[in-house]
Length: 109
Image 1 (tube, rainbow, N blue to C red):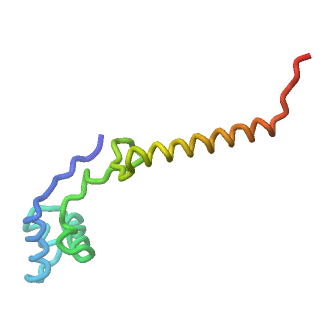
Image 2 (cartoon, helix red, strand yellow; image 1 turned 90 degrees about the vertical axis):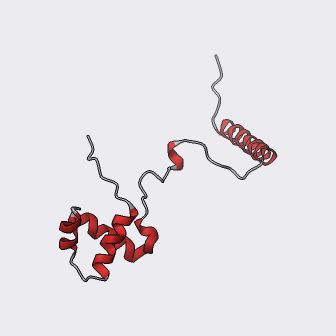
Image 3 (cartoon, one colour; image 1 turned 90 degrees about the horizontal axis):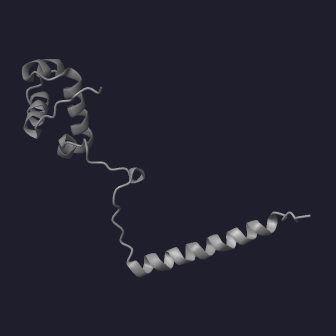
């Protein structure tokens, strides 16, 4: 079973960043003062340096892989979708007839 991670509010993350930047506290002393793991504080600081304040926003559970299913929002209209599918169908039919022409058929004797 996976490890359950605690989700911290943005205010706590900002407090840790402020202690690091304005008070010149070390990461270990910040983690002891706030009661948060050293690597967690280190990760927040790295995210803040890389992405700014948006780096502190919660990102878990926001990504949805297009390969895992779910509804995809298409900008394609119904008529465009129908014409695309008809073209795909015609292409597959041509491919199938070409493939059948390449395989010699066995004659019944």
